[in-house]
Length: 211
Image 1 (spheres, one colour):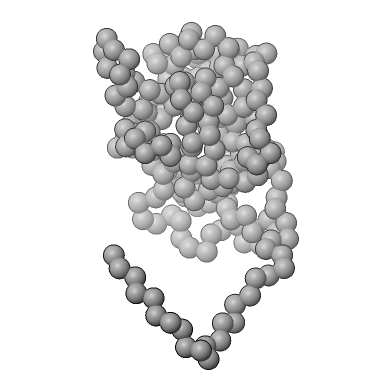
Image 2 (cartoon, one colour):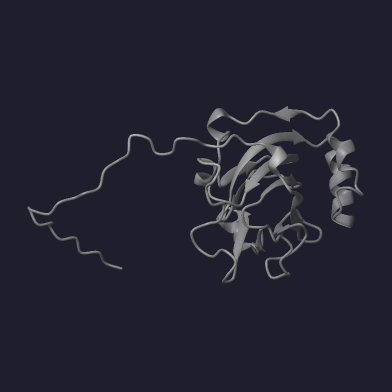
């Protein structure tokens, strides 16, 4: 691709300006707004008899498996992201913004991981028992605002408040909570690890927004 940039005419007027205030109000993350709580579990699979990783799944599903996440436009959800791998994964959610509520390390990680590989059911595997008394990790100050990528700590549960509506909708109570385009059409959206070879090896899932 080639871009040819020509000199602007001397008499051309640029009417644009930078506003003194970009946005008067950002909403504070409030988990009480959440209507749904989801669990997103990160798995890493290895070749039999070796430690060589072969693929990484979210909720034990491949990218081509049917959609299981169908958030509602205008809604706010809590996502508990359970990272059972040894790596720090930068999780990226398309369309949405999110804020980190907390991060807690899993206790007796090996036992919990073994159960999850067999059953893929955090409740049946006693997630709350493995979080009881667990170490809490404070997000750095620069990571505490609304984001669309966050580094998910290995061997821990990261709780996110995920917002499926534009941030500017919070600047006024009467503001529209829908996006300025139809988010329900087309193939939908995805969420994934932003490490290229991880998303290439199936650490990505489709997501369909509904109304």
